[in-house]
Amino acid sequence: MRGLKVIGLFCVLVFLAACTSCHNDPVETRLIASPTTIASSELISIDSLMWQQPDSALMRLLPCFDTCCRDGVHTVSTAYNCHYAHLLLAELLYKNDYAQTNRAELQQAVSYFDSLVRQAFPPFKGVPEGRGIHTNNSNDILSFLDARAHYINGVGYYENDSAVEACAEYLKALEIMDERFGEKELVGKKAKFMAYTYNRLGDLFSEQFMMEPAIACYKNSYAYSIVSPISSYSVSNALYHMGLQFNMKGEKDSANYYYSQALANMPDSTNPYYRDIVSTQYLLLYQLTHQTEASLKRLKQMVALTEDDDERLTRYLAIGDIYFEEGFYDSACFYLEPVLKNNDNSFLQIQVANYLRIIYDSLGNKEKSDWCKLYLALHNETGAENSALVSQLSDLFKTYMSQRQEKEAEAKREAAVKKVLKVIIPIAVVLTLAIIVTAKWRSKKLLKAKEERHQQEMETERQAHKMQQAALSGRLKRSNEELRDVSKQLEQSLSKNTFESEASNDYAAFINAPICLYIVELAHKSQFKSKMDYLIYKDDALSKEQILALRDAAEKHLARFVSLIRKQFPKLTDSDMDYCYLFLLGLSEADISALMQRAYTTVCDRSRKINRIVGADDSLYHTLHNML
Image 1 (tube, one colour):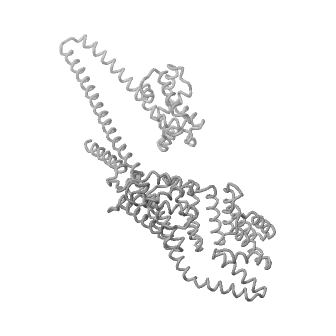
Image 2 (cartoon, rainbow, N blue to C red):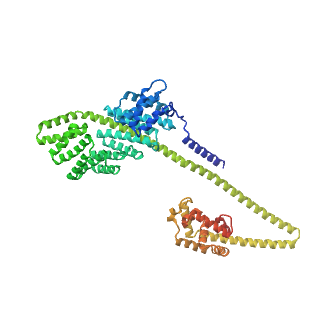
């Protein structure tokens, strides 16, 4: 017993220790500079405005730089606010389609926020950087600013044609967000930021014909746009770009599916995004079905709705493509030549130059054909450079994805271990307590039985001694009367024991009847639960034939008991008697609820009703056995 108590106490202590470890981290939260206490209220207000009205936010921010980073009390008067302001300036320049003019100051801001994050989340032995550290709101703000700084720094690299550096900064921003925030926290501005970043990465990979990474990025952009849309067109735009990647891979059916989904999510048809999708889909329709007239008609309708020259040239390229494929070279030249002369997109120019080279060769225009060949040759000289660029970008993305998958796998392992511990430890505690309680109950039961046997033996000895004393005293007459009484009591006791023995044999025959054995085995095997809906045990319910077989077994083996019960308690119905037979088999209310397909509360009510009829306060099982 003492050993069991020790085991139980040990399990409880382990459980409490596990619970404590889940909620109390020994690592202190560190934050050298708290954004909530040192950030300028004006900058916070501008930051909030930026997400809805970037043009107005820029106009409010510019006056702050009159006093930026100077001493004294000014709008921007601390190192933190100075770097914060330059981060906002870079973001607002980008959002208002201006070139980034504060590159040096922005990169200083990146280093500054990185240093604050390292101080707030220092790595320590045994745990990856940042993991397991309890964060607060100030640290969340700081981490988000750090991620934004890396993102907008990547935009600056991209504007300066440094695609690898831009990609590295975008991935760093994602890494910070993955490290510091759980999926449930990536809502609102954070979800928009994730959509922005994945969209930029998708565009970067798409330009280098890296379709698989681009698809992965656009899918993530789509997922975060669903959570918090960047604009009313962001969901459609992500779907459209996924379709473009599948089109580039040659998977036309998948491309058509995403184009259709993009159109289905488009809120209106009066915007350039809609016209882009329609034009691309009809060009694809021509490629799949060669419905030349329908495709050209729809594409020319889109040309009529264009709002600027860049969009018009894009539509021209689609129309010229169809005319080229159909061999109508004069019409193809009409649409393709303006694209080559006026479009700044090198990829489109190369595509058009290829078309025109073939057309000019066919038309015998050697001068123009040679010019196209020269242009293509000059471009092909950069092929090795592009190959190296793609390789670098691919390595960066693979490294990021590999690290992310490792972190996700680690997080899943930790969650699985915690989940198992939360299940196993309480079960171990409950089992230990159950063993202790059961052992105590059995000990008390054995002690009580021993005491009863001792009292019976003492009473028997007392009666025998009394009879011996009476015989020795010479009071034979009285002794004879006592002997007759004792004899009578012994006869009654013998009769009673005989009756009880017969009743015991009848009960044994009853519970060993085939139907009873089946019911008891079914209940033991199924382990019916009172908290479960009885309807889920429908397949285990007793049929009418089985209930009739149970009645027959009771009336056959417990005939005297059944007759006595019915005679003394006529209010008991046949259905009540069925419940009595099941209780006599030792079944619980949960077992009977499942087998009779009745609610657990209904079975309990029936048990109390039967007890009221027979006038007993004990459990129905014990009541029936006492009567038996």
